[in-house]
Length: 276
Image 1 (spheres, rainbow, N blue to C red):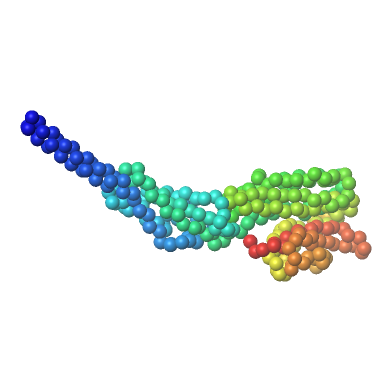
Image 2: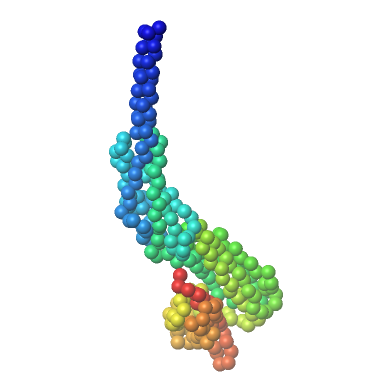
């Protein structure tokens, strides 16, 4: 009986020792890697920064595996804390599947909200055809080409009746930042085919207080034979424009022969409520 008790005691000691040993080994396995970032709070980069370029800001180490920097991956939060400011999460996993994460704010230094562009002036001859889908485009600083995502609402437009019709264009990028503009399509009975005024832009965005030289947007002036006119023949009506008040303004370019306007085109200027 004595020998049995001794044997049981020895086995108990061995069992406890093994449990402590494996428990200690298991604790070591549970040691997660650590990630270090050069920036303590915010990483400031351009919008076209790649994940590979973001990874240059961080390193990772593990007690067992050593340097894990090359195994770090980038996770991004697709919403804004404020315009141009989002969150980036760096993550790394060691050989025991222990995971570490590190979060930093990510500021895009050159970010601005999406801006829809007009490809033509939306002055339409009565009974003329215009495809609004082809009249707009948008290249976003982060998402690239969003033209196909632009939503167009034109409930009252009637190409058979002269008048001004509100056309709404709206698009949202992956950060839930929205461009929402309303531009008038002008259906006219006037014949403006005797000459052509072409602009480099048909819709521009301005900051409050910004004075604009509208003449600089004229690229080509032609008569109906395709011959060049002097830019000096173009009259610019920018009387509607108020740089101190947010809103949408029409700037008209025209050429007259006597009292008759032989051609007219339009630039839309949007004064933003706030910069970017």
